[in-house]
Length: 341
Length: 161
Image 1 (cartoon, chains in turn green, purple):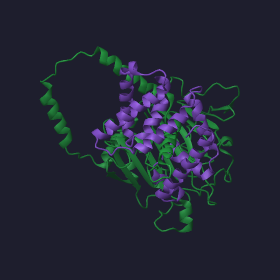
Image 2 (image 1 turned 120 degrees about the horizontal axis):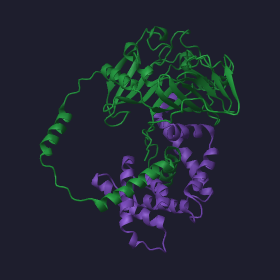
Image 3 (image 1 turned 135 degrees about the horizontal axis):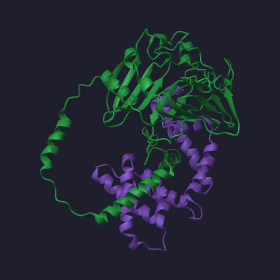
Image 4 (image 1 turned 180 degrees about the vertical axis):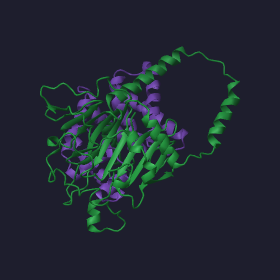
């Protein structure tokens, strides 16, 4: 069953009605983080166990294997880990280059509007086969969906009204997509990790802290003085990047970017990092405001080389999906299609 | 059994303190129920029978891990909510879950935002607190209040005790 990785206890028995609180908590987890396929998988596992238990025959223990297993276990337990944080990130970047279908759940937390109004996170699914086969499905807070993709040759976009626009000039898909909630980074994991150790100070932190038991946690803090334009990972103004890397596969299973809080800077709050120079990061727009340009759907399809309005936080989490249909990255057939030439 | 699996999962998640145990407790509960199916009294509720097995399996698991047992009074109340949520079995689990969706729509926007961040986006409390410029304790309180409002709303719809 999918338990939210960070289903931190927000309930305790000091509540007036702890039983009802726990039941509602459980319903919410089920509503948002559990689907019928999860239940089917669990039931299937039970059925398989029942079936196996009927057919299992007692097998003789392979005594010869015991010393070898013991040596292997001890070796794994006591072998010192001499991997530096940089080496781990480089290995993760290398693993991310392996051609494979990967899906990430992306969460964009917008910068809070200065008037204290609330803003909902923007959710997206980022599907990547390689740097040239990318598809991102954005679910806007009002429920509208926008899909953008690149099939290796052309970039395309499907707007909430179903209209498909194809860029036949062969221009690459923009790295940053501008949405009303803020700029959304659309890039392969390999590109995000490439050259990270050159512009960020990497530290390996306690394994079980935020990533879970057995998962390596790396914190990358932007090196002071290096503006986004000077970095190899140019135009990424993230100041802190948290990485969760599976040491068995070197796959990055979670990446969280935190951007400077422009409002805190304007207020001059102590302890806040200074935002990069203006040319690196223009001031963010307000939620739902298109003051510095037309709405995202009306912009040229090749726009967004730099983030116009970085969000507060951007999170990429690997999902269990590991294969897409062959035509997954090609533009969908729609009743209305326009071409940009 | 499949029909009751979703509700059993909700019940187990509510009674089991260590959420990583839920899958194992679910599996063992289903195995025991399968083996003892012959003992089931068909005049009684199948859901309640499976939940009874589930609560005993959960207690066994907690005991093996030397974890404190749940308060029996709370377990009893959770069962009462489960019975109310079961209703008369004339509608599916997913349809009953619709009551939760209806209540979510009625939440004040800041509560709804916090619920979405915690449950839908599954963001760490630290991240939410940073983004909303609140303390983690304040986020926890907000979520608890949101759940209390949802509980009141669902009780009003007759799907909670």
